[in-house]
Every structure is written in structure tokens, then in C-alpha cells.
Length: 473
Ligand code: FES
Ligand code: FES
Image 1 (cartoon, rainbow, N blue to C red):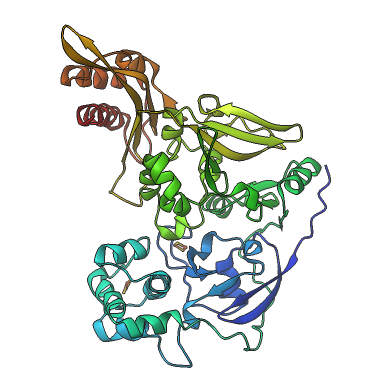
Image 2 (cartoon, rainbow, N blue to C red):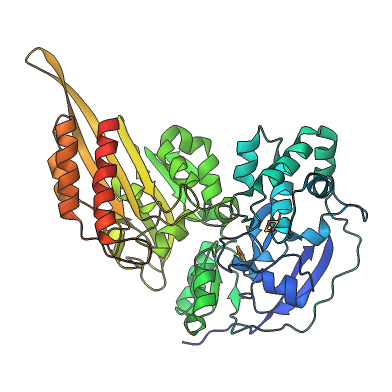
């Protein structure tokens, strides 16, 4: 099969209000273009995996980790780096506040912290420290100066005039273009093609099935950096706006595959129709990751630890897959077929997730990780049921129906535990039943030992978490 791809394309965008034209492979990391090609070294490389925030920049006003953004996706976009934060040669108010209040020590985290603050202050007046903490989450301060950092941001937020100045400090558009030097390559890079519609994307896949689809890139860019041998040209899905959005249609909650986790988290439709989804989204990464990561990406990465997957199993979700012969629907039960394997065939794309709205259904979700936030799950548990109330011997008798119990991180793929479900089906909740269900699920799963946890720990925790969910319910 022959690919008709350019080795490099000319990519136009603006950085700090100055235009840039870069003839580089679209798969080149934005971080490398900024640091190596443009000499803007304020964005740093720390982890290279989206976990430290040292490389943070604003892309079209949103905080992103530039180590995870292929520059081809920045075409036509507007990038703000720490070098562009000052106003007319003077420190921006938030920068001055960091200096006044000791918000910076070694300075390594300052660019990410300041840009996270800028994104927050430009979007809203934070209601207090928790909102500031949330906004800077994912930016690690090795000097552990978080208290001063938060105070520095809060001081600007409390000063309406200074906050407004932050918002008004967008870069001028009359500055000379930035010069791009000959790209310094750190390793193999890949071209990226940008279809403008779903039919266009499917046609390109049909012409070259080796193209690798990329959406938010938060997982794939890490894989590419770690394993250059797996490099294949990228098929960028980010312009397929028809795959983005959330709606309730014909009794189903429909989520487009390109919907970001941050959009899922803040959707009023989700809050009304299936609030557990917003709860799942809040446990997934920091804002810079949630701005980029997509719901479809979580499904297609097919990690056993994929945060959303147990909830999709527990709610009998249906995944829509588009291909040359049209759109087909696959039940969540049949979608994840093995370790990082899905039912999507070459030439196909996941386009939407449909979740049937069931009156009276309850859904609970718990994630256990190394810490409360920003961690990969050691165990995920999702439970769904519907309550039946009937009379028996003169008293109201509550029984559970349509019980689903799904787990992540305890097998090579997300799974439902059918024996445990059968135990709970048609039963009346009680502490004894919760204990029995915990023992059943522990006997039913076969977790593995790996770098994040032991099988023994996972088995114990899965039982305890299920028991707690049942007791709370
Ligand atoms: Fe750590 Fe990008 S270098 S998030
Ligand atoms: Fe040193 Fe934050 S001030 S890493």
C-alpha cells in the first residue's frame, strides 16, 4: 500500500503573537519546535510524559503539555509561552505577584505554574484556594513551594484590576515573524495528515491502512517517544468536529469520540443524565491532560486501567464504529477483546459512545490509585443496578435488578464479573450480602502483579471497594 504523504509540511501558527512557519514533520512535538527550532526555552522538558507540567503552554487559551502535542495539530493555532506573558516589557501581574510573595524558588516549575494561573484567571475569578489548586494540578514543584504559589495566584485573583490586566495581556499581532532554525532532530519523527471530515478520514485510511489515528495524543505521544520503532504516519482526527459533543437522543446519552474529558466533566447534559461520568472525568489527569485527552482515546487505548471503561461496561454502553461499509454498533461487552485490543478493525474509526438511559438506575464508581488524584488506577470498580420495590409479608421489600459489576486493572482488559452480578441479581441489599459479594468477586478475578501493585493487593481492594459501595448503597 502506498502512502502519499509529505515528509514534512509547512505548519503556520502564532507564538506569543508572532507568526511562525515551520517546515517540519507534523508529528514533531510542539515542545521541540518551541525549544529547538524557535529558541523559546522557557518551556522545559521534565518527564516527557504529561506528568510534571514543566513543558506547559497555552494553546488557543487552554493549558496543554507541549511534550504531548504534535505540532501538526497546532496549524492555525495560537500558542502562548512564558516568554509571551510579560506586557510591554513589564512583568505581568501574576509574575510580579510570584516575585513579591515568594511563589518561585528554583524556578523550574514557574513557567507551568504561571501559565496555569493565566489560563485560570483569564477564564474566571477563582472562588478560593481549592479552585486554584485544581487549576495548577499536574504542575509539580520540586521545591514544594505550593503554599506560596497559591498565595501568589490568590493575590492576583483578589485584585480585580490586576486580574483584568492578566486577561488583557494577549500578545500583539503586529510583531515580526519568529525565525525557525533548521530542525534539530532528537529521533525519528513522523508525518501527520489532517483530514477535514469523517468521510475524508475514512478515505485516507482506506488508501493507507498503516496510518495511525491520533486525537488528543496524551497516550500515543508517550508511546511514540518511548518506542520509535513503532512509528507510523499519523492520521490527525482533531478537525473532525462532527465527532465532538454530548447530547441525549432517543433515550440515550450520546458522547462523540472526540469529546474531551474536560468537556465531559463540565457538561450540564452529563450532570443531569449520568453524573457518574463527570465524577470519572474528575479523577482522570490534571486539566492540561483533560483539555486534550478524549473519551474515544480512552476507549481506543484499551488500557486495562482505562478510567472510563468499567462505567461503560456497567451501563451497557454501545460503541459506534465507522468504516468503509457504514457505521456498526458494538456492545461494550464485546469491544475490548484483549490487552490493548479492541473490536475496531483496520480502516475503521470509533465515532461515538451511546449509553442507554435507564429510569431509576444507580451507578457508582470508585478508583483506587497511589494517591487521590493524577494517578493510574490500581483498581477500578463500577456498579450499576435498578431498585425494585415490592410488598412481602406486609413490608416493603427492595430488590436489585439488572445488576452490573465491572472492574478495571484486575485483568488484561476491563471486565464484568458475572458470578458476582448473578449473586446480587434479585437480592435484597444487606451487610451480609455485601460481604458475600466481596468474597465472590475476590474469588472470581485473577489479577496480575505488575509495577503498580500486587495481585494480592488488587484482589483485597476489589472486594473491599465493592463491599463499601454496596453498604453505602
Ligand atoms: Fe513533563 Fe511535559 S515534560 S509534562
Ligand atoms: Fe523549584 Fe517549583 S520553585 S520546582
